[in-house]
Length: 212
Image 1 (cartoon, rainbow, N blue to C red):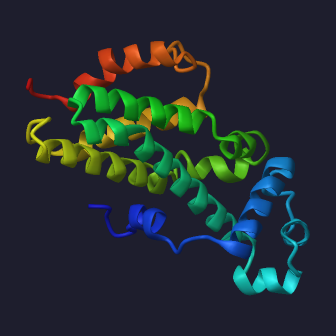
Image 2 (cartoon, rainbow, N blue to C red):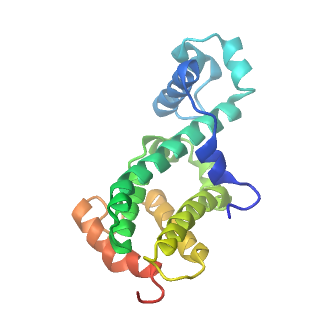
């Protein structure tokens, strides 16, 4: 389902990060937040991560590999938080609309509150924005496939009718990304109760092309 690139499994099933590796990725993240990606050197990350520069280069062949590792760790954390937000509703057997609302709120809040995304849009826009827009198929693919899995599960549980989930999943993924790239919006996403009402009125119907 994830297509040739298999990006969702790469995000989900990457090797666990622990010990020194976690410290290095945390150091890189903090440096990116402080200086932006372009102005962060490998030497600065090594200093903050309390490893030698040679050790850092043994773990990551170059800065692009380090940036990818940080992005994957951030994406994994984002999906884990989305899963955690919906899990109580899944376990209680809540109806599809309740689960969809909670996932939408978690998705948009997680994206809009991500400090790294805010920082790179502010300081590295000319480098990064193409990978979120005209070359953003990987980001869309990952969100789409995650949402398609979510819809498949609801269909298996009899909470949604049978239909191809990919177009709906892609529409919601693209909508969520647009809320990150262009934050001023009439949609009340910064008010959680209002965001839930918006999701119930406007997002839930997109998941139910046929009445149940």
